Length: 536
Picture 1 (cartoon, one colour):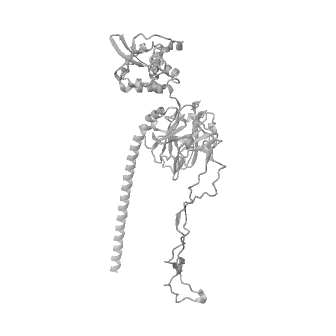
Picture 2 (cartoon, helix red, strand yellow; picture 1 turned 180 degrees about the vertical axis):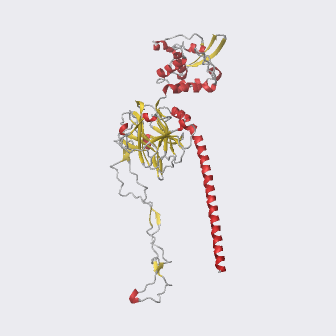
Picture 3 (cartoon, rainbow, N blue to C red; picture 1 turned 180 degrees about the horizontal axis):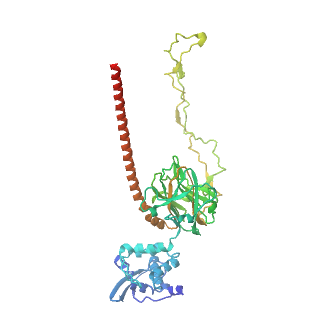
């Protein structure tokens, strides 16, 4: 019935005349009178595919004590028909907001959202009432209102963990694969703003493996959607060797037996060992774990850092650190997930007469007759030692020295090779084993996340984990957590470091003064001893 009502034909109640929309006219489109007017458009006469048809209508509407007079110029092209559809749907419901949501669900596959918003972005004012449209909203709010509605309808958070209290232990399963895994403890570290908000789980034992994981509330597939994996890491201990990454897995993973060989979809995060400091992005494709080919350097200081991985439905990705882009690219190009598109032609061979030598020896160049000189010669200044005994020591030979006349190995000079054809390039052909895959980014099941780590020196704190299909949602979560911590944390650490530096400087000066005083005392004692000897 709703669909029938939406497309029931009506006749415009006002006379239309040809006109081109202007900025002033467009600025007054969205008023109650206009929406009632366009809601009565005869849809059988609106051909979206044709070129622009321009009509306009002067509509008067009186409500309560206020009168609105509107010159509405309508372009019956895709943008304007989108607006007409929007108004038509909205007025089938008591709340225009509900109508808008229904419109997005019904028509977004058919009508470009960018075209839908083409005209609304020109509006200077919008009118709403409690029942329909009658409250004024300024120009700066137009796009925010529309986009916020769409985001609220589509964004979904699959998993969120902030470790705000001890209840995290009930959600995160301790693996029993080994009986000597390290223990995570709740901690905000040395420097924080609000302890309950800034605390996370901290590795607490040196030279230990750690293995703990949690299930999502529901399993999902990211096919056709963006996927965002984001969390914070703080290596407060000044890590020298250890992991700081997460593994995101299928929902059927056995978390009680979670360990290093447990299959996963994605492994993402920092890994540090000695001079190697990189961000891992490992994708599982057809049962094989594939590491990104590009180098992404991770942070190695003692502050909290935000790591974000975005997998897009167009087979692209982005890695962010502290909200700043650290690497972007194509999944196909930056991972060895698929066979090469082209391979060397196995039937092609370099011609026998193909000369790749750019320079050749000059056949006319002849080695000089006096070129041959030994590299080393006996030292002419050396003399046989007087105590040298030929019978006992053997025949004496002077030591050898470098020959100043030695010119090295002679080589003819090089000239351009007239037969040079350049470097032979092996011809390539299409790889018969290559098959494009538009869903490299997609996994049919996500349902768990875990920390599977080795740390030589413990003290890393993990916090603010979120898995979502919305970049905006991840950014909003970071704004409420990481962004509020980072400035305060840095200031407190810098203050503490300065106090430590001053204390160390004072201790150094004190040690030097004590050393100098001891030296003076020793000199005084030596002087007294010398004076005592003189008296004797």
